[in-house]
Length: 466
Image (cartoon, rainbow, N blue to C red; front, side, top):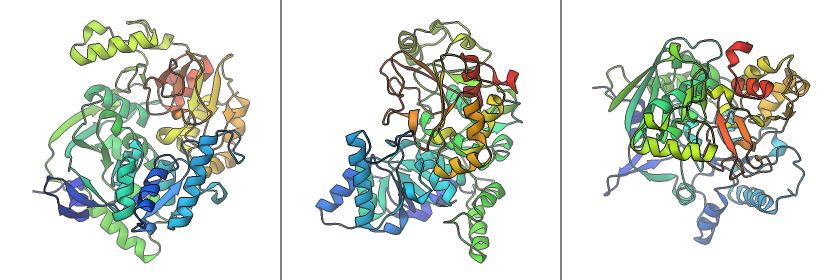
């Protein structure tokens, strides 16, 4: 019987099996940012410990970073304290820090891959739930809490339970205007936001293997939104080609040896899976997550569901969603007007995302009354986009062009919704209050769909604008 990639990576990183059934797992790559790491550093400082493997921890700043005025000190005193703590900790403990001056700062899940830090066969941990993003390379990547960050800093290991593996096979060629974001929203819609608890998702099939690395990052990014702490894709030639020449990837003859090993980590043909799910990618249309979790999604041509069509927890969740959103059950999702459009985040803030949105924005203008932001995922993405003139294209269309950061994905910086505003967002969560207003509403969709909504002033079918 063959082995899955998860089992291969897990076994290679196992230090020992613990009496409680968990595994003490070695962490190959540890990524940190300014929000969840300061307390962890303070805890090891108070115990007189050092960082066990400082060369395996890398830092950047993203969550609380203003995307408009980045002059120091920040206007937000707490944000400034977090930044100062990150700078001090990295300096004191010898951790590599991609700061503003490096030209490589950005959202941690954008920076890791573009630097070549994220590689197949690694275990990757970060104090952020969307660490599953890095599974796109065939890494086993997961989010951790502050006390686990402390443990990794002190020992480079972590106690974890091995998840089961569900294989998600996506077949067919995606239609025009249908993207990786639509694939993962459709998966979560089908399996539910809790359907992946206890599982790692292995994404496979010709739709997945036909995706670029940036598209694969989008898919794995949202595995956690379906309850799967880990989501991964087997490494292939696309993975190898992406990593070639990256700053922290092996160089010269080492690269050839590394790529052979990376490819050997893919799941064996006769590997057994605990569960399987299939999705016809060719039948998908653009998806819109309209409710209060990413699983409450419909196709852009569909109407919002009737609560009576669901039962149990689904019905209660739908009723809560309608009470919060004030949307009408059974009404077309295309009728929903928007006030804000946000293109960015670790889900969809990469160059290919901005290019697709720019195709829609080109020669058009944001609807009156709509506030539209484009936020590159990193300084590198920003430079590349500006070299292609995307910043000027977006500005001409009425979008604001911002500096790199998490921005309006979450409410830890000045970019927030106001009051009952409705946001079309390329981010990953539409939880109540996620975008900074306790009453604001968030509709998740692809970057191209966000651009279409910005232009039309309401949810729109991007396929009619391409």
